[in-house]
Amino acid sequence: MFIDLKKRRLHKRLVREIDPNNLPKHVGIIMDGNGRWAQKRGLPRSAGHRAGAQNLKTITEFAGEMGIRYITAYAFSTENWKRPKEEVDALMQLLLDYLRDKNQLAGKNVSIRVIGDRSALSDEINREIDVIEDYTKDRDGMVLYLAINYGGRQEIARAVNQLCREACDGTIEPGQISEQMISERVYTNDVPEADLIIRPSGELRLSNFLLWQSAYSEFWFSDICWPDFSTKDFTQAILDYQNRNRRFGG
Ligand code: IPE
Ligand code: IPE
Ligand code: MG
Image (cartoon, rainbow, N blue to C red):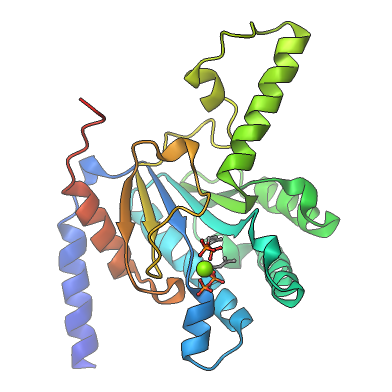
């Protein structure tokens, strides 16, 4: 009890150190390590995915209260289909449960939008995505982009295909395609690029996450598995971000 109180005070002190004028506008989170979290506890991997999904609500609510405007959370990659069918099925079922239980996924005043290739998702999931996007669309606390069947390369290829169609239609000039025009055609076209990307679980890679949007992102890695990633860890990531010197090549 005493230790709990002490920990909470310490956390509060950390939060107070945050400079509200230097917050990252857009934070990307690679929610990794669910399987290892479960394995360590002798639980099935699906239990880890469930614990990870629960943690997303805690972290987004906390980030919203802190004043962070956009979070993109990597939930399922275009490569994750390579996993055993049972795991993919369990992940899709979990996704469906969470989308249906609207208040479970979308914390207070959080607006949800899904990014990724939705064509491979079931009709049921697609329907629930439409419902939750509509249900939360007027919330102005923070926007949570949930990346499902998302891959940075797929996203760029999709933008290129769109540009080709526009060139064929004669609305744009082939050979005149700019970075700006690609930025306008990625899923996150109405959001600033990712200022900070957080990856727990000990892996030091992007795994096809936000390739276009991470050109000048700051990275924050830790060994903690995602279900254990706490609001204190999030606070620490923001504090570390605020101590970085972002030069953008200048
Ligand atoms: C992240 O956890 C969730 C998804 C990729 C869907 P993992 O399932 O990758 O967990 P580890 O990396 O095996 O521990
Ligand atoms: C990245 O994690 C994808 C998600 C967290 C959704 P992975 O576990 O799939 O990445 P790798 O295979 O370790 O690179
Ligand atoms: Mg993993």
